[in-house]
Amino acid sequence: MPKRIPLPLPKIRRDSMPIEIALAARRSIRKYRKGEAITLEQLSQLLWACYGVSDPSRRFLTTPSAGATYPLEIYVAVYPGGVSADWGFVDPGSYRYDPYSHSLELVKEGDTRYKLFKACLDQPWVLDASVAIVIGAVYERTTSYYGSRGVRYVHFEVGHAGQNIYLEATALGLGTVAIGAFYDDEVSSIMGLPPSVKPLYIFVVGVPETQPSVKESEISSFILANRKE
Ligand SMILES: Cc1cc2nc3c(=O)[nH]c(=O)nc-3n(C[C@H](O)[C@H](O)[C@H](O)COP(=O)(O)O)c2cc1C
Image (tube, rainbow, N blue to C red; front, top):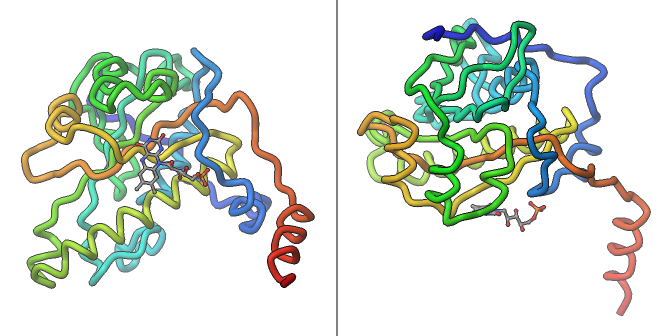
């Protein structure tokens, strides 16, 4: 089993979905086509959007970070048959995303699907997805500069990273949902997180059963109706 999987290089597609369409179409999607894989290219784009390198000269990432302290650590649970590559399916397991080499590093082999489902209070979409992206934080990277206020900054940052996943998933035609309801200790142990990394947020991703449609006229009518006395 390879210990490191170099991801396909991130693509900055000029013909990608316009930001307003992605914002309007972004929804929490909980129904996925069961057993359908996402591609390694799609996973690569999601991870790059979440916390990938966007300013190589300063080693800055796609997510804004207080003092560029970058406290977040991104892990991925690849479910069996969840990610397809040219050479077959990516081996199931827990992987750490290294933004600087844009690679996955194997942390723990094996199927985490059912254990994560249980750790996330039996939320069915955790079982039906193809992967789960677990965002953790090393608080000290930020609190060592900003003291206790750094805790707040870490929580802002994880929200930025999560929104990046939502918008990229929308642009890729994938479905995702933010998961805040889970048992921290169980998730840490399932994913093999080191003690310094506290799990904060999970995004399960899959191929959606249906895509939300963008309805500009409905949005406009709603806003106009709210202007009437
Ligand atoms: C901090 C946070 C935690 C959330 N936790 C969960 C969760 O555990 N399970 C879930 O199904 N959805 C969760 N959600 C998604 C919300 O239910 C969803 O964003 C909300 O219903 C609005 O729907 P929308 O995202 O489609 O706009 C969470 C969202 C946020 C921002």
